[in-house]
Image 1 (spheres, one colour):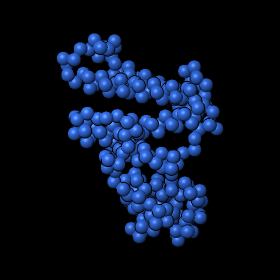
Image 2 (cartoon, one colour):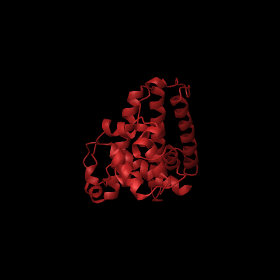
Image 3 (cartoon, one colour):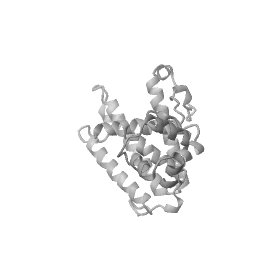
Image 4 (cartoon, helix red, strand yellow):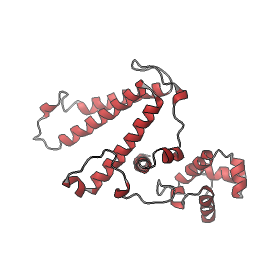
Length: 231
């Protein structure tokens, strides 16, 4: 099988609020065997993959991590909403890769800010925003500096220092955001009221953000594929 299957079947069971014992009984296997499947200790056969896909009403491709869409749909560029309501110029329209990645990121950021609004945390909103600003700044300078003739005087931090310092700043901001989200003060902000934190799951995302959730799922999948390559 693969590492995605155990994670996904565990997620689906917990989403439904089922105990392992109850799910195993309804699936017609022992609790011990289902536990082994969920932990990745044992691999199941194709028949069980189909059976559990029907049980949770998802596709086999989703169970195997081949697609982030629960029904196995393949994401197409035209399926993604342009929530910015901006007209692309001819160059962007002709570059499918640019347009696709732009929509994945912007639609996911829209979800992020909806969640921040629900959390009602000034500190967390500030730190998340700062992190995104620094990451855009850092990559913008990378693109800008691709042509050595572009005047570096546009920036006040010199080219030898900006990359390392930006990374350090992002680490600090991430630490502050983690502190605040766990209810502890950081960077002059109060800790977040954890009771106000939204209850989230893939099902919630799909219901609350039906248009932009596919972008988020694909962004997660693409990012985790890159992370897995490092390990």
